[in-house]
Length: 374
Ligand code: OSB
Ligand code: MG
Image 1 (cartoon, rainbow, N blue to C red):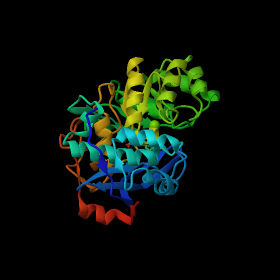
Image 2 (image 1 turned 90 degrees about the horizontal axis):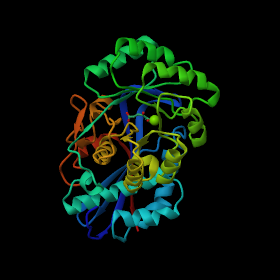
Image 3 (image 1 turned 45 degrees about the vertical axis):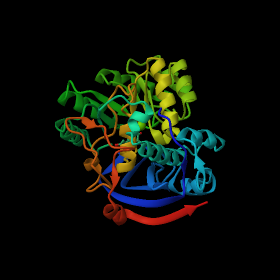
Image 4 (image 1 turned 90 degrees about the vertical axis):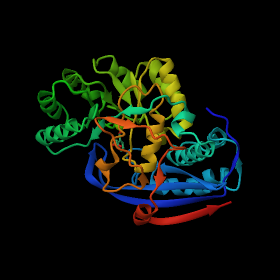
């Protein structure tokens, strides 16, 4: 962490944004073809900091949604900074503890402050967070395809693009058949699966059958609130378990590690309430010898840039889901574009997130704007 000088936050601009995705993304909990999100700009002292709220339209990945994040931001979180002199992003993180849950809303503010303070200091955000990498390794998360054959073709396309790890979304009935076909076509790729909590312990035989496919890990097979069930399952699996939904905080991470519920952790800034908590999870996992990687929520440029920054920390030792922006969108709202080549994404070197808003593009995809002051 660097020393900050306090900054006065004069106003917040909350935009609702809609960007069509180039593909329909299907998971065990739903399907989406348009990325809808809130973009938060905090202004003060002649500069802006930006945060992307990753809450989705429906409460299917997380209980938070676009329409819960809005009033929580305006009634409880933004008043902690608007018209105030904020000592540091850490001071906001501390003050926001009073607000329980609502981590995606919290993260939007914390990310915008982290960006603003790093810009004021003239330092890349990754470095202010403790990042050491100049480039990060990235994989790709592929949605559920209609058939095993389609799955193999989708994997082929992304392997050809050089992604360092292929993650397949699975659900009961669309699992072993896909994996068998993919493993036959690609015996040596680093392969993982993500069930988004679609199985129960009654499916343990099916999950054990996936051991045959030499997965690097299996992400969130069981209920999002059941760490103990994952510990139970882990005893009977060869494949390591990675937790996503179940880890909302460093306390969750420590409990899951202590119980033997996971050997790998997916860190998402939004799911855990901001960079500060993400760093605490990273530190706890690292101390326990548990590798972490940066997950994704189909972010546009601002959220993606925050992901790249956190993934530059040393404990992020497995490829994350932060694939090229151009995979998702015809045009992104930031420049330079966040693009991976051969599975490697450079960490921007400019101040803050290191990306700049493209006002023309942002104008085209913004569906509503609200300006808030103290
Ligand atoms: O479980 O990791 C997940 C997207 C939305 C919600 C949950 C998840 C995902 C992804 C996509 O896997 C990752 C990405 O490409 O951003
Ligand atoms: Mg996941």
